[in-house]
Length: 440
Image (cartoon, rainbow, N blue to C red):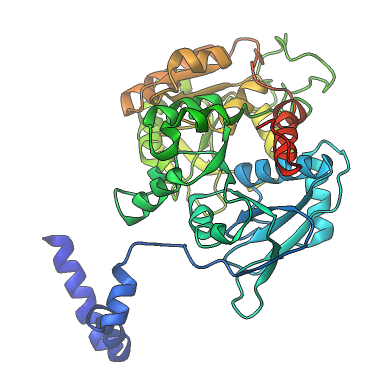
């Protein structure tokens, strides 16, 4: 009731201060077109504008809503990495923005992509846009597509009937229906699993979860048989214990994780705008754990979000401070100089930071979920502390990790050591399909 009265009071104040703005706000609820636009929850699915032409060389079109420099985070980087490796197989590849004009600087992109490939070169990759109805993107009738999100799969629906091959590649890096409440968007995300596609799944734990759901064609044994599943790689040249050479094997370091030159440090993967990272549960657990004597003298830093996370009081004299946004190498260095990472993730996917911290010899506190069991996480690394996704679970895990943090680093991680090991077999299978082979 108090919240309702405050809202009414705010509107009364707005009416007095700015009658025109108040009228516009009111119109949003009373004008039929604006009312529908405001309440219809189908988001981000706009037409993809293409012109299908015959006689063009076959090409793989890799779709994303908007290929941008600022958007090159873990998931998109993995897609770009795979696309470049497909190009290395001698296949024409093009990145296509489906809802926004291209804003990538080609020179910057080539340097960035080359770094993802560990310095290896690759053939030219086109960058194009299919968002302009007045200038549709020309695609060959024999082209194929790689969807990277459920919205891009939806955008393909009216295009595929015009193509010679009506099956597409679908990069699955998360159970995306869970990005939404049970809603129109949830239903449309699930609908894409009923389309005809080759699944490309980032991580076997996620693949197990997806196939257990038996949604759409994911329940079809033939679809499962042609699925390409890869494990995320953690580049040991970047993610390694502090002071360890990139050529040294990732093993126990004789040195403590906390040299005398710095306090012991906990990093919180704090992403308030991403619900599956459970910022609220993590913060409550931090406040509970900070009161334990095990965290006396520790430093607490928030990472993982470009948006501002204000300084937050954790109690017992501790404050959560925001670390500056760093480039990839800087981020790896920060992990190597920390002792614990708290990374909540209500998802069947492990989350890259959990693995990267383990490779750096630190302790990752994260939660279990469905197929992502404590046994599965423990098999990946002994440095992953797996807990139930509860305040009590995270709190106990943090205190356990603090007790282990003074021990010598163990950077054992049973995951691919580079992306060539992880993605080259997938790239070869995609190229085989594009060239008319039967490998997939």
